[in-house]
Length: 358
Image 1 (cartoon, helix red, strand yellow):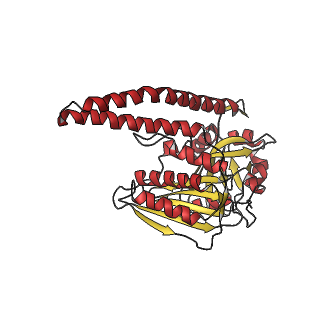
Image 2: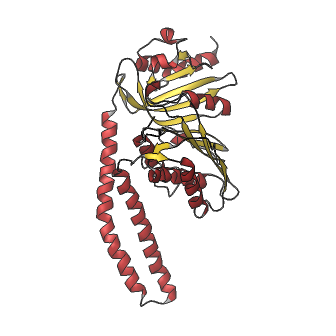
Image 3: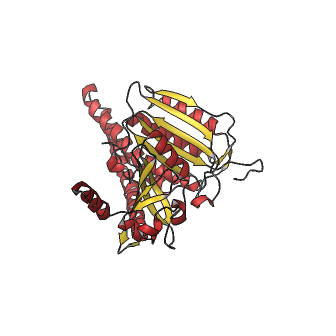
């Protein structure tokens, strides 16, 4: 073994998270020791077996992996349940990256927490709930004194010169901005169940585009690429609009400010399911594509988590709220990203003429 090969082998064995190499058919060619523990299988017994035989995922991954290969772009999935080695599903982040030009993929699995080879997801989820609960409590307590500050600044401005009123106007505008942020925190922790019905998603997409172009995406070019034959979705139209507005706002903020392009797509894709192919089908696909710099590698494993943001003044709630809403619809959200092309994809159930999901 050459020194370079020896170094690669040591790095592969030392990776602290499960790592798998997949061929073009999504069969395993190699796994590291952490993956052996996670999958409950040796590297020799796992070699040549289909990924779905060793890991049952609650998200449709096959089409996304194919797209990562065709686009030569990494795939990030921030929240996916994985059942392996006879254990109950645990929440994980997935990162997949093409390896060369032969269609091979490297997959890294990041469970919420691991100790002694066993996944411990509950403490992490409990901690997240505690943080959100504390944020809700603080939001409620802060809004009352802010209202007093705003009112006092407005009264004070009546007796000031125009030059001094600029300062009180700043106090009022910043106080209102904080109140709006606190409202987002409160709504994130108190999301109502969706009121679902048959929805023409193109109507929602048009509303989202118009709203964006009149506001935060006024300098962006938005391209519509819709499949007019797509049937109705089984969704809450207002919640779906909120998700699309969040994705459009995110795209507008990270893409090139002037002259940047956002593409909205809709299409039908058979064979997309939750829960490893046993759940409800999700053939209705919506994509929000931007030509920005891509997702920072440091955020790849936590993109859909609350209070995580790559922007200096970002709240870190927009994408987390979008993921929460889509999960409430029994749908799936994922992202593939490389410099110059980031794709957020929503997979949703359809509605029958009887008014129920299919």
